[in-house]
Length: 112
Image (cartoon, rainbow, N blue to C red; front, side, top):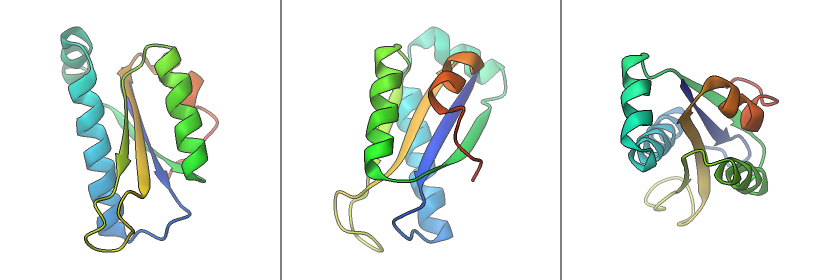
């Protein structure tokens, strides 16, 4: 079991902003997962990977692929209080789900 969080590299987020957006995505996707997935993931150590995303379009495409496969997802839009314009898509969480299911969606991306 794992969760992959894809964070955009093209919007110029600082490290703190990046960390916050990744955390928002992780928690939001976790909350969308059913009880069985959540329990399995928690028992397995809540494995996560953070990956590089190129664009808003890419995050939307990955989200659609994961949703078609029944994997919990969360697309994060920034509130715009600090570095980014309101509504800027910053991150996508895919999972928690079985490693191979998450890898079918995000396996071609580079680690952050």
